[in-house]
Length: 356
Ligand SMILES: [Fe+2]
Image (cartoon, rainbow, N blue to C red; front, side, top):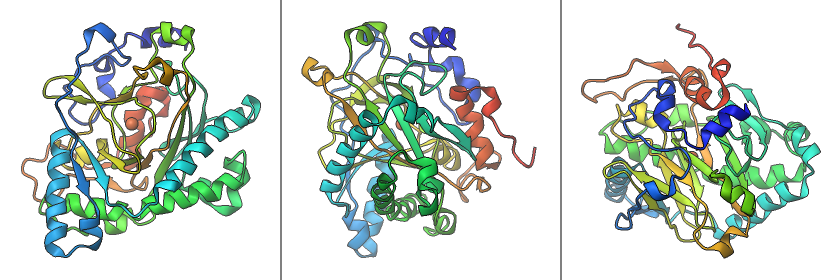
C-alpha cells in the first residue's frame, strides 16, 4: 500500500481512467502540482437563488431551473443562496466536526473503520488513508442513512448524541433534493417529477472531513489536503467551508478556480450519476482541497461536511428520455458506483450488475 501511495504524489487521473464510466478527457495530476499549474481568477461560479423555486410561482421555478441548469452545464458547480437552512446550524456543525475528530481517541476511531455497506464505504477513514492511491492530509467519516436509525446509534457513532444533531442536518438537506432534481429535469424538458419516487428516502452519505493543521513535514511531502477527484453521486450539497481550499478544474482552459463561497451558502455540484443520465451534458467536475495560501490559515484545522446524494442500490441509471443519441446502456446504481470507486478502494470493491 505504501508503494502505491508514494506513487500517488505524482499520479495522474488518466492512469485510472479505466474505472470511469462517463467521459473524462481532462488530464491532471491528482496532487497539487505547484509550478505546473495555472489558476483561473476570472471565472465566477454562478449563484442561484433557491428561494425562487421554493416560494415562487411557475415562471420563477422555470427561471431558476434555467439558471441552475446552465450553471451546471458550464462548470458542474453552482452556489445556492436563498435556502431555508439557518447558517448557525452550519457554525455548530463546524465545531462538532472538529470536536468529533479531536476528542475521539484513535483507538475508538478505529473501532468504526470504514467498510462497504451496499455501494458506499462507510465509517472512519484515518489520516492519509482516504484512498489507496494518494495520501491525503484529511481524516474522514462517512454516515449513510442506516447510521441515522435511532436504534443503531452505538453501531455507527462514537458519541451517540451526535447522531441526532447530524441527523437533523441531513433532514434539512434532504428537503432540497427534489427541488434540485426537479429543476434539472425541467432544464432538460423532462417531466420534473420523473425522479420524485426514486429520490424519496434515497441513499445519501454525509461525509465529515477534518483537515488537521499542516505540519512542515506534511507540507514538504507533496501530499495535498484532498486530491483531485469527481464525485460519484447524483449531486453534492456542501455548506460553504470556512477555510480556503476548494478548487474546481475549468475543463475549458485546464486552470483551477479557487471557489470562495460566502458563509451560509451551499455549494452544489453534479456527480458521475448525473453526468451518466444526462449523456455527458452536465459534467461531474474535478475538484480538490488545496492547502491555504496564507501560512496562518495552514496552522488552523479545516472542517467540511458535504452530503452526497445517491440512488438506492437497485435503481437503474439510464439516459434521460428525449436526449438524442444516448451513449450509455442502463446500469444498476450499485455496479456503476462500486466499479468507479474501486479505483480508490481496490478492484475487489466492485460489485457486479445483476444483469451481468
Ligand atoms: Fe468531492
